[in-house]
Amino acid sequence: MSLPSIIKVAKKLGINLSGRISRENQEALLVGAMRIDLKKGLALLHKKSHEAKENGGHADWQVDPKSEVGRQLTRIHAGEALRTLASKHFCHGLKLSFFNCCKGVVGKKPKSPMLVQIQCQVGPIAYSDC
Image (cartoon, rainbow, N blue to C red):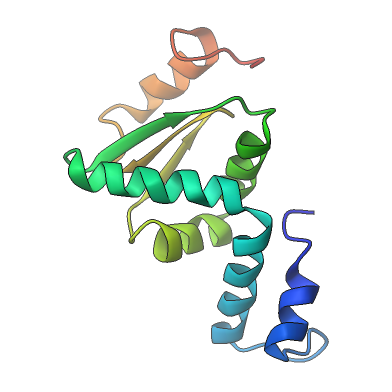
């Protein structure tokens, strides 16, 4: 499960998960659970967002996808909802891009995202079985 703390956060916020949940409460639930369950991945992305602001608009990252941080980054980027919320709440609104299973960019995406994806499959960045 990507966010096992949803139930804990719902209880803390007094949100009934069986009833209708407002959009505002949906966001609060997800962001609260992300803060608990994806702490290391979000810390890396937040740090990279500051690098991007100092670095002309983008900052690359590459991590072992089997590491704890790597698994969290995959969970953050895999779905539109978490990726959007991570951008909004943890990366100062900067865009998040994800390539293969081990590389990403905070801020402006590369000029040729298809080339980066290819290089993440067959080198020089990574390989399809990384």
